[in-house]
Image (cartoon, rainbow, N blue to C red):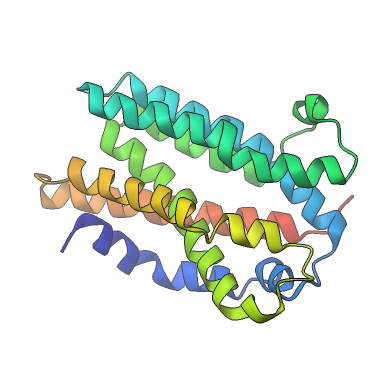
Length: 220
């Protein structure tokens, strides 16, 4: 088995709970409160900025040009491609993009990004890549499921663009490339390292769940 098979095996109950989360289900059926979605987008925009920093921290741990290119391409994808959907929605909500960074990052968001940065500070490249993997991989897991479940009724769904952006072939490739990168880095690891990676992956996945919980809270 590949290391990512072990990782997924250990978090599948958590990830399946994402699919049953009220925020996700309400987005799929189009009934999600738009104020909650707007607040989620703002927090996720702030999250992506910190998420990109983790890849920047990983750059100095790279041992060759190919690894550096992966991190650099990931940073570009986060700041340009992934942020584009957020910006499109937020502009429609009347938000000024240049003012988004003035919003306060919420506790669950800060705890999650701080966790990844702590792994990047104390761990090696593989540890760091495993800490960021649940984000890219689970969003495709969620997007794919939403698209499959609600594809017949997406046309008039306000959240269609979000669902399609995380279920499209381009994003699938982002997730697969990240998975393959982790598998390549972990080719010669021992059992102790494997257990450490599983622990990192589980903790990051729990932070993902807390982010969804935060997103569904009443907007104040």
